[in-house]
Each structure stands twice: as C-alpha cells, then as structure tokens.
Amino acid sequence: MELFEKHIYTNRRNQLREKMGSGIILIPGNTESPMNYTDNSYHFRQDSTFIYLFGLDIPGLFGIIDADSGKDTLFGDDITIEDIIWMGTKPSVKDLGVSVGITNTLPVKELFTDVSRIKDKGAKLHFLPPYRAENKLMLQELTGIQASALHSHASETLIRSLVEMRSIKDSYEIAEIEKACDTGYKMHVTAMKMAKPGVMEQEIAGTIEGIALAYGSGTSFPTILTQNGQTLHNHDHSFKLEKGRLMIVDAGAESNMHYASDFTRVTPVGGHFSQKQLDIYNIVLKANNTATSLIKPGETYLSIHLKVAEVIAAGLKDLGLMKGDVKEAVASGAHALFFPHGLGHMMGLDVHDMEDYGQIHVGYDDEIRPVNQFGTAYLRLGRRLQKGFVITNEPGIYFIPALIEQWEKEKINNSFINFGKAKEYLDFGGIRLEDDILVTETGARILGNRIPVTPEEIGLLQL
Image 1 (cartoon, one colour):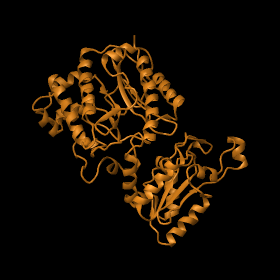
Image 2 (image 1 turned 45 degrees about the horizontal axis):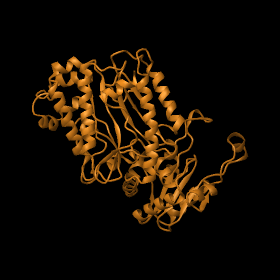
Image 3 (image 1 turned 180 degrees about the vertical axis):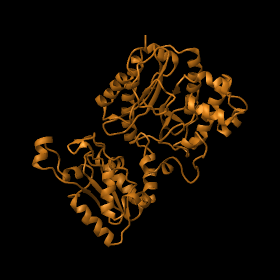
Image 4 (image 1 turned 60 degrees about the horizontal axis):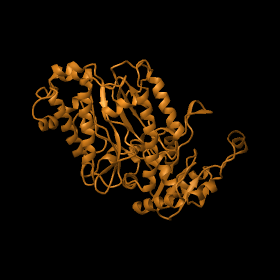
C-alpha cells in the first residue's frame, strides 16, 4: 500500500475542518463487494474521498473528522487468526492510523455508538451522496434516513468544500497522474501497433488492460476499443479488425495510488488513412490543438468548448457537410449532429473526478450554469479554469446513422446541414482525440509524453 507522507493527509483533514467550521464529517471507506458469492468479490477499489483524506487502501474502514473538537477517528477491525491464515499478517488499525496522522482508533461497532452520541449532542452530521449499496445501508442504519432519501440529505457544504479542495492538484498528485499517463502511453502505442487486419478487438483490449495492471492498479474505466466509433461509449470488443476501417481506443490507467489517466486515439487498420478519413481526422486534430492553445486560468471551459465547436463546424463546412454562417450554426447547435458531447471533464482520483458528488457541483458553479441544448448539455466541465486543474481535452466527429436520419426527417438545423453529403459518411464511424491537460499559471501543459497523434506518427508505428 503506497501512501503520501502523513502530514499531507493531516493537512487535508485540517483544511476541510476549517472550511466546514463545525459539525461531524463522516467518510465511509468501501467494503468488499461480492461478485457472485460472498468469498468471490469484485476487485476492491477504495472510495476516492476516503483515499484523499485518509489514504488507506484497505476495505472495512470508516473515518470521522470532528470539526467541533478537532479530533479525527479511524474505525476498523483488526484481523483475526483466520484472516492471517488466508491473507497473511496485516498492520493493526492503530498502526494504520499512525501512518496517516491519526492516534484515535476504534472498532467498527463503536462507530454506531459514536454517531449516536453525536446525534444526542445535537451536532450536525455531514455525509456525501453514497453510491455503493453497502454504504447506503450502513448510512441508513446510522442516520435513520431511508436509503432512497440519502442523496437529498447529503451535505452540500461538505460537497462544495471538497470540490474546492480536490479541484486544485498539488505536486504530489500531479506526479501520480503523470505515472498513470506513462502507463496510458504504453497502452495506446501497443494498441496502435496491433491494429492490423484480422486481429480481434478483444485481443488488443485484453493486451492493453494487462499493461494497466502491470504498471498500476488497472484501468481507470472500462476500455472503449472498437471499429464502430460512432457509438461514443462502445465497450463491445467482439469484431475482427478490417483493413481500411478506423479503430478508436479510449482507455486509461490508474497509478497504484489510484490517480487516473484518460486518452483517446484513432488508428487506421493497416496503417493508412483514406483521403476521406484524413479530411475528418485533421479537423479533429485541429480542434484538439486549438483547445490546448486556449486553455489557461480565467477562461471558462464552456467558452473553449464553443470555440472548438466552431473549428469543427468550419472544417465540416469546407467539406460540404455543413453550410451557412459558422457562428450561427454553433449557436443553433447544428454542430452537435457531428460533435454530440462535451469537450472534457475534470480528472484526478476518479477519471471523471468527484462525479459521485454530483456533476453540477464539480463542473459548474454559481457563475457558469449548464447549457440546455443537445450536445453542449453533455459538457461535464463548463466553469472558469484555475491553475492546478487537471482536465481532459477530447473533441470528436461522429457519423451516427440514426441521429442523421432523425434530424433529416424532423428538419432539425436544416439550414446548416447538408444531409445528402452526410449520408455519404454513414459507414464512417467516428474520430475522437483526447489528451490530459494540466492548467498552469499561464496556459496548459499536456501531461505525460504526448501519444503519437499526427497521421505521420501513427503510420510509422505500423511499419
């Protein structure tokens, strides 16, 4: 189990305590979750907030941060002789607490006594929206609030405080994200080299997921790898690669401390883009590079998303797929026929960082609110950027037959779309290019070595 130095966790808890001012903050860790029977569990993944504040990557732990008394308590049970037989010796809960700056440790059963005492004193109990069934049931028992109603009782003050803290990555976190990016580089270059006719998608997906396990704690999300890139989140790997088609790979890794990477690249099967593919690819590459050039503190990601949409619309207009005034087309949402998602999202301990808190709190604020328009409505991050944000930059162009058919039938944005031309691309698939970006003091830095992205670089990998 890898940990930062204990003072980092102590400082984080103290900072949160100061922001909250008063009350009791309950942070449940995750427990083992059975896959198909109790002793055959899913791969354990600790709760990201628990990792951030307590650092311990072990199931069955719970933390309380008391903003009234200034005391932190770690709850957990020491292992039994049966545990030792099957899993070996482990540190005591007391020693685990000391490793992250906590001297007060208690058995799990004392958590219920402690919470009851807190409630009797009238102290405010703060908790986050739970996403695991086990923790929902535990919180229901602790608080008396029905599991179905816990989200509406979650502490918005706690959510806002943690979003403010976790949005800014320190140098230790950035170093961990860079490790995940290094693994992501290995994964994607391997996939590009394997993109040859006759190879099964599953073979490539399995190979790169093995790399994620070899260099860290596995993938940061289920791998997207497919020739059918018109489906944005396509997790089906059941097809054999065909010469001339495009293979899209959206995949990332976690470091051993669970910090994420998230990259997307597109490779022509056999190594050579057709002119038609190259025309679309170059528009997406220009959109990606434009976004990176625009990222800096003070800019809203919503405004950058819309400027990138104009790059895409202008490129498609040059190819005859769109028409009319580019700015008017984007204002009308016409670009979303081809670019029906947001430019990117926060990234850190989660690939969609802090999304369990509620995306509205992570990607937006009182100044910047979501846009209720198809395409831009899916933008996960719209708010003003700050130094220390780690974000993704992932524009794309897709040809989704059912969507093209619907828009043509309903005459949606008819004055901006050349549907006759669009129907020449129904078998095209999709292209998305994604980099991970650190917002710096004056601009942006691509994290990790940039994965080959120009058509020339990609072609050289398959020689």
